[in-house]
Length: 163
Length: 169
Image 1 (cartoon, rainbow over the protein chains, first blue to last red):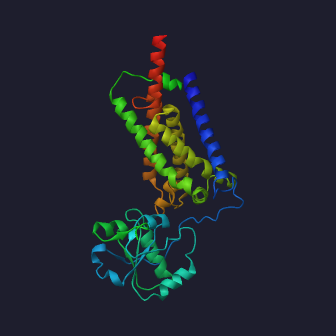
Image 2 (cartoon, rainbow over the protein chains, first blue to last red):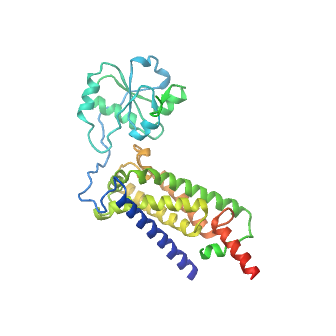
Image 3 (cartoon, chains in turn cyan, purple):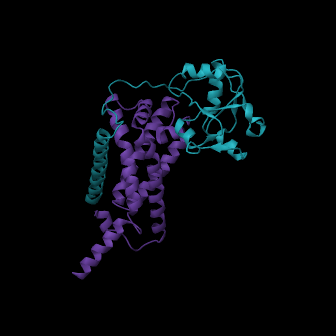
């Protein structure tokens, strides 16, 4: 029993040590955050529901890729890691409305738009297509299966580091 | 180092040798992977913590600052086998906390993104599969805390060295 308590004590000590280090690191690092949030966070629960159903297309059905604008709805870090060749990054706004000027920019482009997410459980592509359609952008289709389906078809992807 | 290290069993079922290494690697990879983005983007993680609506505002940032480093440091310690039992027990505590947070959220019926892997998982909604995943990790941590450090760990190395010194004296 004593050894169990001692083990528990050392575990608490380890946790406390890590937290102390974390706090010190946060103070010294650029971009550290306040120890106590100065105001409540602007959270959005549940995720914005769209009333329009997204139209989906499979990667195999996409033929004339030259005349399509691909919109990557995943977080920007994922976009930087890998994205459909020629795509633009427009992360799905999980916590609010999308920037109005970017939506207007998409409206002005007279090309079909194909949105995509990560595939699998990641439904950001589908949600983005529905959201853009609802906001008045025409010709928006979701790429069924996201970037994974795109790659499965052997289509080209690019990374930010590449020229 | 620790009592656990001193009592490192060298005999017994050979399966423990394999299982403890597997448990260490599983927990280490999971926690280091989960911590990485949160360490880099504490503000984003703080928002995720706030979205769960469980902690009071005064504790949200502290959680967002501290938790990723606990995950990262404990993950590294598990790989090396330093304070293996203690590190494993910390992962048990963290997984228990995650399970409670997810169950509370599921019970309330909120649909929020799972902040476990922050933005890498954005768009994923939490569900019972996450509870199962964390329960599996909790079991691995509990097993490791019970079985203690075995081969290929700093704990075992130090324990052996102590035994040799003891025999020589």
